Image (tube, rainbow, N blue to C red; front, side, top):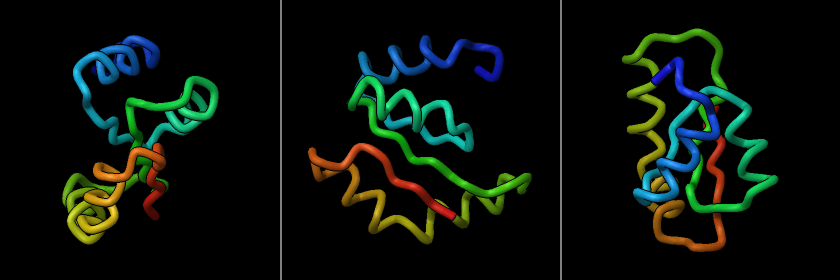
Length: 79
């Protein structure tokens, strides 16, 4: 999906009730402009391994669950 247009991914996630997990600030911008859903988990970390991303997500499981359950939250930023 790295060659798919951001807007196509956004629309697909919205239609299918998915949350977008990204390191790309464009989805944060789309969320601010378009509102949510879809919700966005924005990982603000430079180049890192898949294992590092996995660890970030696992350590934030409570925050991710809150994002999923709270209709007033649209973006979760993780460092």
